[in-house]
Image 1 (cartoon, rainbow, N blue to C red):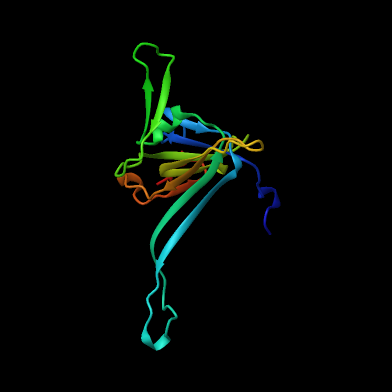
Image 2 (image 1 turned 135 degrees about the vertical axis):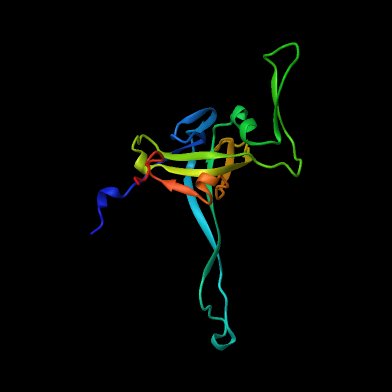
Length: 185
């Protein structure tokens, strides 16, 4: 019988720039305020060959690829974070008055998103068995700036989990649980 104490709910924190021990690197980012929750989903694509004798019914299914998606909105309008994960965002500091700062976001094509390890941690939970580590994560963001009486400005985050190309973790998409656990020989 299922253990009903392992039914979980609640918000989560997203961290990007995680080392192999599960710790936030010095230039990593934390997004700890969301609106509408945070979701992590995977999508698996298949090749399903058919033969004439069975019509359109597939005779087997072969996995052709798996990717993951992390989606949430945050009211944390912090462009210091954006310049770390978006190659089209740039911080400009005035040459004579360092208090004058602006952020410019360009619409240039052909820029590759940086990928780093990320982790999703349920809020207030310190048990790594409940964490989801994304091995190779690129963050996509869009502004959702509604200037209305009954809402606030938000960033829409749609991060992609790619299979790792690191030879030690080749193909790894995500890890559920303590990233420091190792197999014994």
